[in-house]
Picture 1 (tube, helix red, strand yellow):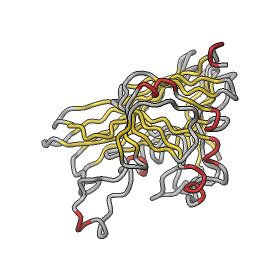
Picture 2 (tube, rainbow, N blue to C red):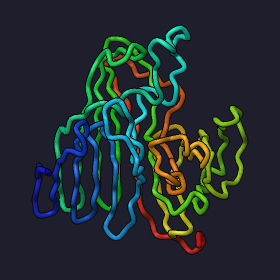
Picture 3 (cartoon, helix red, strand yellow):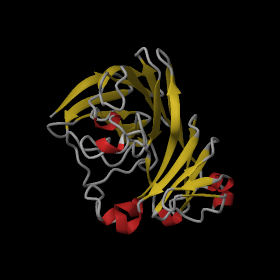
Length: 302
């Protein structure tokens, strides 16, 4: 059963219980439709009017406490991937887990602002001693803007008296016709670290994004995800220091229960990221942000 939490001449915003553990915010605006899970503070869907769905969400994703939601934009914070600062003797007794704890926490809806052009939501997650590897008091605030374009700002505030270190990513799963018909020309200009081989590699053409592929690109400019079959371009801007490009490939995806059969053939992850440890001084804040725009398919891309 859904509950209307906001309504005016431009939008209706409702809240409903997807499962016992997961509440969903649903947006129906004159410019777009969207949905967000308060568990994980995670954007699940964004459909600008007249366009296809921008994000991919697995049909077999978990929607339960202690499990990450597979798809949309999971928040990797305060570490990305495995935490390499974990003492060896504690790996078995209290494993750090991949990608930190923000994507498995309950977030609060702080406020809603609706105009003729967009819906702006503010989500908040604040805590301390959340994990022994990251004991600092902190406040995370997301600003999510949904209109014809999408913008996301993750503000990270260190509320403790000691400096902290973090890594993180906006782990965006983009909906595509197929990784085979998808390319990211801008990243061809950048060197990258290949996580599959463990080697640094020089720039090279990206003919497609078929997995297994797992790369961290040293590139800070905007990129475009070009889908030649759907004749769609997703322009992505960020203030991150790197881009992560990931698709697990068929063999690995088959071992992942929360990726539905052949699901890996419908997404490419392009992630605004800081995978190297960043200093977050005591009492200070930092931001990780992205903007996503659906743009016309140009003649030279056809």
